[in-house]
Structures are given as structure tokens and as C-alpha cells.
Image 1 (spheres, rainbow, N blue to C red):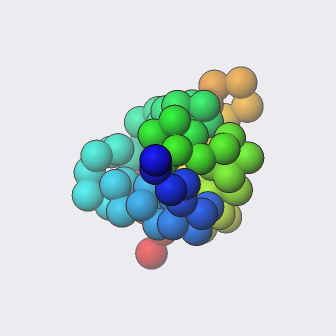
Image 2 (image 1 turned 90 degrees about the vertical axis):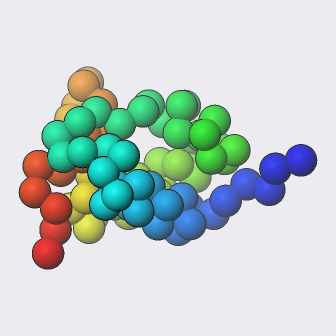
Length: 75
């Protein structure tokens, strides 16, 4: 059985993946449902992680188009 991650750990892992180039700037990220499956977490937990990264300027949400890595990483 996989132990689900908390939203802060999910945010940290996703941020690390972005910094390592797994998700380059301006690329579309997986959907909430896909991220929830990847991290063995609920969609609401993933949403909280994404909201944290959006507040930090790492991810940009585009209404009706999905989530994208910010064009310029925050300083």
C-alpha cells in the first residue's frame, strides 16, 4: 500500500521536477486527476499543492486550458 503524500510534499516534489527540467517553462502539466494518480493523493490535495505553487509563481493556471509551468521561474 502506498502512503499518500501531503500537499506540501507534493508541491515540493513537483517544484523539484520543474527545476530539474522534467517540466520545462511554458509546458502544460498533467491534469489534477493525473497528478492525483501520480502522487496517490486526492484531487483536493493536489489542488492545494498547485495553489501553493501558483502563489509562489511557479505554475500558472489558464482558465479552461489547464496548468502550465511559468515562463520565467521566480527569483
